[in-house]
Amino acid sequence: MPTLPNLHVRWRWLRRWRARHLNVDRHAVVDHVCEAGAMAPRYVFMTVMSCGIATLGLLQGSAAVIIGAMLISPLMGPIVSMGMSLATFDFRALRSALKAIAIGVAVSLLTATVIVLASPLREPTAEILARTEPTLFDLLVAVFSGLAGAYATITRKGETIVGVAIATALMPPLAVVGFGVAVGSGTIAGGAAFLFMTNLLAIALSVTIMARWYGFGATDSPKQTAWQATLIVGTFVLLSIPLGLALRNIAARGVVDRTVRTTLDEAARDVGGRITTLRVDRDKRTLLIDAVMMTPAYRPQLADQIERTLEAATGQPVVVELREVVTADVDAQAREQASASLAQLRDSVQRLQSAARVDQEARTASERALDALREQALGHFGRFEVLQGGGEASWQLRPEAGLDLRAAHRLETALRDGNRRPQVRVVPALQPLPLIGFGDDSASLDADASATVRDIAWALERWQLASVEVTGYAGGDDALASARAEAVAAALREAGVTVTAVDAADREQAREMVAREGRGAIRAARVQAASTGD
Image 1 (cartoon, rainbow, N blue to C red):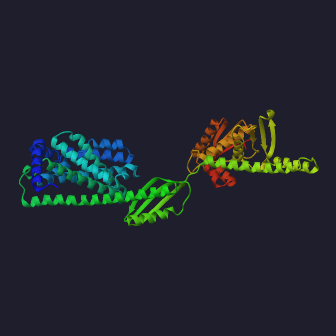
Image 2 (cartoon, rainbow, N blue to C red):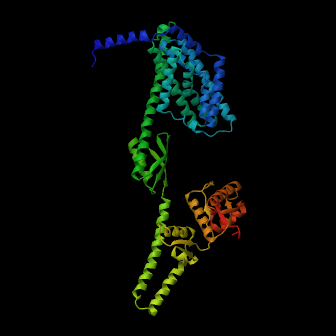
Image 3 (cartoon, rainbow, N blue to C red):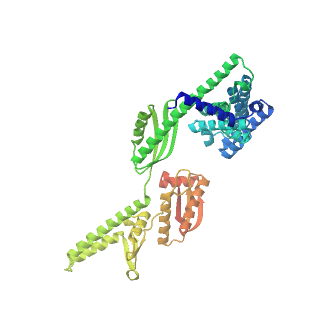
């Protein structure tokens, strides 16, 4: 623990070091700051231009345009002048800086509001929403910008570049306030205004601290009266209070957000899933959590459990909107289903063969009856023929077997597993081709739809059908129906199928299809043989 004499020695050393290394022309710096922060027509004009460009960039969601607006923003001058006046107790400079800042804010709000009202773009973009809830990182940006601005101003090095950094922390939130006013959203306008005020105060006080570090004080300004000095000190205190409150709120919000993220991640790990999307909003004191979880199995009570855990951890009401997306291994399920079908078939054949071996020694009428029974059971599935001396086999399935295209395709895949001889070629029974389903307003083939296309291509090759026609259905939406038909046609061509026609069903055809196939047919595509039109 340093003693008082040691502290005194260190303080004297620090003062000598500052006098030797931080020696600047303070009068020239003060004059330059006052001149840069003074009200002028150029200041108003450049404020309008900068805010206009920033507003357009926010409406487009373009970070590049927003950064371009910062290059011409004049906000650095009056803010640095405000911070310097607090450090030097210059009442006249403080009043001039506050006047310039107030006019700049009013001009910016008016510019942003007029642009938004005249623009057809009214939906808040990600760039806009990002500036409605201040975070600790936003506050740190403002603090570092203020320190850098003061250093650049005092040392007269790189002021233009640092001005861009300061404008980055102020002009976009100010433009978002104008957007909120124009669209009538108090939440957006209030959140952005809070961010703007927080950044403004952080920058101004950072400039004050840096100026005091460089030795600026009351001796660098005209003599003030007692009430003016009191007013300046009071202004400094008043500026510090909301900044301290903002820092407390931001820190508390950060703790809550980390608690929410940790709790949801732990809940997801416990069920073998993961959180893919998380959004935390606030309605007064209630936390509104919207999350998407990828999970191998649906758990309907999980959202209630998370709500109770978060309410106990945060001490405030919590509403969790949890959307569970169940994931499954489609290929594994297909293999299991094919294996089950094959196992049932093998079991049936083995039982028949066992029954036949019981009376194999005596070729009697009973043995022949059992042989006939076996042939009849196998014939129920279809005609089985061995070709090319036992190297290949063809299995022509019958409709009575009850196997659709997908089951027949999986059966062939299972029978061809490994190097088993003979290689079986399964020919499915003639049947209507299945519809290929799509998601709402989607023309993209998902995993199930792609599997259906592969089954259709396989069946067409087994049936030796040379060409097909594809018709898309979307309830009368020709563009969407055509896109669905084109997606299916492209997948069929890739599988080696010749597609002779691609059509979009009109509203009447779509209505007839829904009447025959059900409501799901309105989001589907149909494949039919070109030779028959079926």
